[in-house]
Length: 616
Figure 1 (cartoon, rainbow, N blue to C red):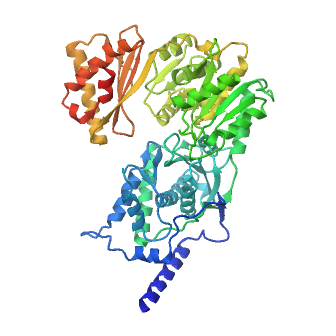
Figure 2: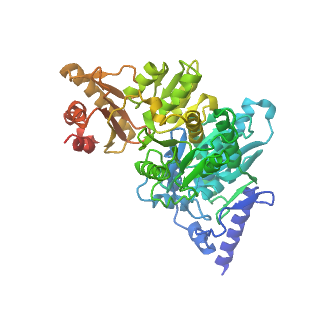
Figure 3: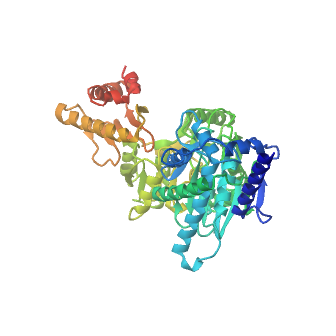
């Protein structure tokens, strides 16, 4: 009995300590329940809590807690270029820090894992980093309130992570946090324009990745998205915060029940919808019902982009909305991605049924778009990849002759000829990754009018280089509205040479090490160049202007090429192939490359089954 009383007294002391450590748990804070039926499945009883407190020691023989090592390793695995991404792993809402490590350790497959505890510590770090950055840039604001807005895509674990992140931010003095619930990434980035007024924003999304994944994109006023260096700095500060919680020994406070704690609730999507309406009207010479008479299919795949339907309807368009309601379970069986053939085919089918003028597709967080348009015979064709780049470049050739268009590295030979020879533009092919092409567009003098990837990521100078699928749609819709006399938008890019064969093969590095990936890739490039020099492989011409990997033209006149590059974040090598025919690709690209790899010393370290199968 005495032991039980002692344990209860200890529990009471710990609860008091948590309350004193969290000043935001007061009547001044707001709690926004996202679902009235949501249940806190992870609530723990007092006995479970005490069981966790009295587990065997977590310390090893040098007095370092292994659980902390697991937590820090999980944080270190999260960077994905200028974002963070990982598989969501939930854990108990009360108890010891060790319980989070146990949850991570029990996760089969490992990989990048994102927990509410990590989100909390990241929130603490983000609030501190943003405040110090703003105060340093603007000394007159020392001591003033710093405003941060947090939004999510429809994924079911978004509120859990948002609650943790918001609470972490609110630990920092002079930081005020707003929560907006469902948002699009462009709308969140828009908040950090100086004319809008937020100091920073965070979007919780994993874009087109599977529904169990989540992540964060970070924005700061007058800069835009975080750089890789800033993400690294953020995670370094996050590990310090995690160490603090390890020393305290218990988990931070949580709201439970699907609620999110913040200083205020705001609606940003309706405001951003008005911004997009204004942009469409500008494209259409100020007409209030600018889209009257247009028949548009919108497929948002149960992501965040459903609000765009009202944008179109308010301007007079007839809209057929597909998968419009936000649903993070993605009941259609696929995650929205405008490159996904299933999404393209389904959109094309509905366009055909309603005889649409245009089909629009967004990814989950609406920062990428793709399109479907009728050709001159009435059949519906995808307007994406090289076609989309060519179409948008047509607009800038008219508004800003001779300007520069920055693309990723895997665009076609035909696109370069179209941009430079047909449109008189400068094509600057750069490293794959939307942040890479956007930053390069900003660096050039004069700055490029557009930065765009074949994946559909697109940022335009006139839109402050916001990576925005909805704004890309604005430009395509405007072009359609201005050219309603022609039979097909595709007629505008009829001079674009396209290869019938266009695909990518991926080779997994067997030990899954990025270090091995770099070594094997360098060796592969050396072997290819050696074979060109010593064996004189027929028609292989190295592209000296290429800035990523190794790009080889197949013949001086043909538009065929192949490109070898390493993945930005995964232990994978990529082979991009474009050719006039499967026979040409097999004879002049795949078979010679297979011979090179099978004779190389690293052949047993690389799974090149895809190349072997394609060469048969």
